[in-house]
Length: 111
Image: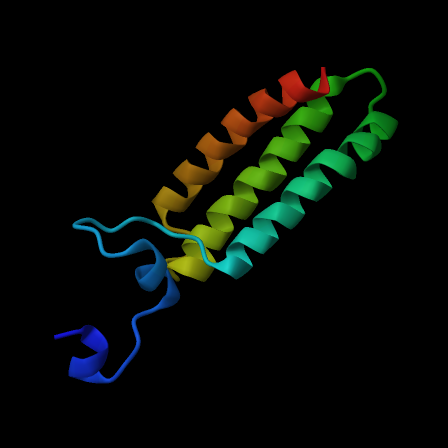
């Protein structure tokens, strides 16, 4: 018997598209994805010119600012919007890890 026939409620969109799993996968909703994409656009097209104007010749400033912006945005959307857990220690760990990794990636990109 299907879930809809048993309970009368439709499963959420992610479960209908991606199916069920045996473990809990952290998923992003459409709004979170849009916010992260907007942060990426700002990090690539807005932050570097501002950072280069403030600190000419220092590419690392733009890379660290862009990486931190995107890392904090991803962590905030996951911990505040998707799971409603707030600023738990895991939030800071994820934000720091993503910010460091993305800063290194942006340093290669902007060099």
